[in-house]
Length: 256
Ligand SMILES: NC(=O)c1ccc[n+]([C@@H]2O[C@H](COP(=O)([O-])OP(=O)(O)OC[C@H]3O[C@@H](n4cnc5c(N)ncnc54)[C@H](OP(=O)(O)O)[C@@H]3O)[C@@H](O)[C@H]2O)c1
Image (cartoon, rainbow, N blue to C red; front, top):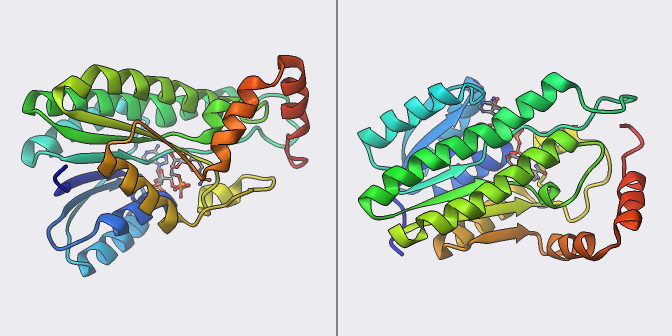
């Protein structure tokens, strides 16, 4: 597969997205970096320019999926995107003492973690299929495979994204478009630090970005990282429901 030259990364102002931008920054590359926080986005853009990449930044709120699709159409029409990594996302757990997550927050999670990446990936996959190729990476979460009672909105949105990614991958593969779902465990970013509880097998953002770039280059269908989360997924699937429910309840961090 030819290395991608024109790359879109959403969530580039964040921990993982910023590491991905740095991972791909090189003299032959043109990076399109999306985010909301201007200062952090400019910081990442400056580091990528110092590594020789051409960089264009765009500030937008992905909870407005209509505006995001228009922005994508505009950016792709200006310069055809070879690889898009949809890394923007919101993490959340229910508020301390609450029985369930706040309804408005569940709606926000669904918009940012499912609606926006799915709609953008659909729009871009269609454009890529018409020109005969491209790569799309959707950053999900290992949480998609576990019914976390303290983060139902997050786990549910990421589970939706995982199923969407699989279906999209199968549909567009014959047209030369590779779709990769990435399901990380814990990555040491601001979002992870805001989440209470232990974080086993915590990855450095740069290591996660390197793994993701390898998976994208191979056109891997699904990358679960790091590897213990592959076993956890099977463990969850094989455990009898009553036992699994008790275990998941007992995993609820004490702060939540
Ligand atoms: N860190 C982990 O342990 C972990 C584990 C599994 C999966 N993930 C996934 O990895 C991805 C990156 O997370 P991270 O750890 O790098 O978190 P992060 O450092 O908090 O970065 C999140 C990024 O998403 C952007 N974002 C959030 N809401 C947005 C919105 N409404 N519109 C536009 N952009 C928005 C943020 O933009 P601004 O900062 O500019 O607002 C930021 O660039 C997410 O999809 C997350 O679910 C992370």
